Length: 439
Ligand SMILES: C[S@@+](CC[C@H](N)C(=O)[O-])C[C@H]1O[C@@H](n2cnc3c(N)ncnc32)[C@H](O)[C@@H]1O
Image 1 (cartoon, protein in one colour):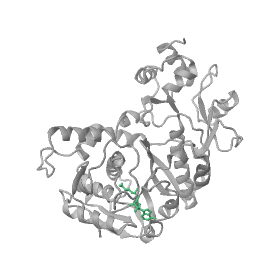
Image 2: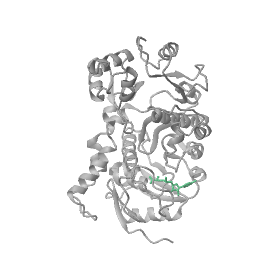
Image 3: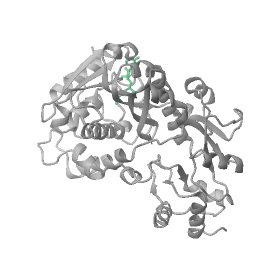
Image 4: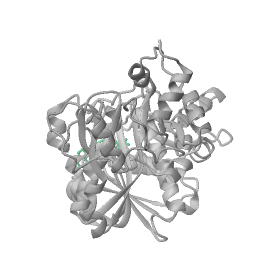
């Protein structure tokens, strides 16, 4: 047995034990097998959003009124489940029966012991552990909430995870095989997800949509439909969170939500997109950079412009994003400087953690205004498309589109400046050209 880790670390409001101080500036994944238990600080924002999403789901009765059986499927330190219990308010936490599953018994022991050592202030909620392979252990019972956060691709876990879900529940799925999902490794993308992705500026958006389509298809196989709640690209990982609802009728309609993204579409393709309700009516004087087409549209599979099959409906829900405000995340997940502090943090250290927590909801509440729209426009790409030299300021673009009477917002899209809008393409072009006339 390894020694007990001596470093006490805080993420959100929750204390844990580690073998060494984590490298907070590291953006990529921690190396598998470096420590006896895996911990990656780059995933802290994802865990923070998980706490918020669970509270949203509870407040909005998406998880019924009774006990909530929640599984942190590939738990490692168990921090995600521990943060649900620690950071949700008492009335929510008291309904949660959380189970952590991992093949690493030492990780489970550490998680349970740490939870005893640093329990929630309200002492509510239950934490249990199962040692085993998630692919079978998850079938031990039905779950209202399933979290899948693997090394690499989640595909091996999806089938049994979906089958294990209650009639209505929520699944959150991470993927770190971003090279595959974004189309830079074409063979694994085709093998694991049955898709192709054009590796351009929207590749991470396409990747999220391919992941949604993959979970949606597995769900439909098991007579369920999905409803995406939030889909995020954050540093090295992609994460999609969705409701899973038992419905044969919904499962039958899966193909209505799937289709293609076409870069540099022809007149004919844009017209087909408009006709299918996937593109706002627009004049076609300047063609858009891309558009969606339904699954039944006859595309050529070797056409390099085409990505998919992918999810072509909304990737998130307005109300969920609107819930993810700066005030709420600080109130729920921010450490309280007024409490007795084992770590004896200085004011500066509290400020630093709060800033980190705020980054987990960057632009999200604003993006709620336009998440249910079709255009996701990268401003750098827009400027080269229109040959206008420097890109228009995303903020100015959003402001002018809203003034013209349409929805628009900055997007939370990795570090790439982009906007979402339902404005017709010709209006977007007109506004961009007004901000920056052609050179
Ligand atoms: C990426 S880590 C999980 C990180 C964790 N969710 C977090 O938020 O810190 C993956 C974990 O899955 C465990 N694991 C890998 N394959 C597994 C399987 N088939 N069944 C159960 N656990 C598995 C590993 O031991 C490891 O702890």
